[in-house]
Image (cartoon, rainbow, N blue to C red; front, top):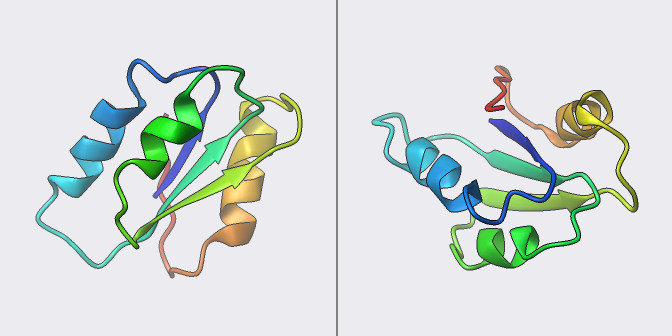
Length: 83
């Protein structure tokens, strides 16, 4: 699951919780921070779940660039996006 985010500290935990609540548990969640200036990354890191990884873009590159970075990092056979 690829979750591109930009300055979404207030809702990123909800999005992650929705993935964790699924009955299918064999997944990786790649949160791609698109250059956020808020606490988005800190909120993601609080989960401490090994299935969740954070990739950070050095500057805001837009949703497409964030998705592409997530695809490059993905190891699974199936990719889905949570926007």
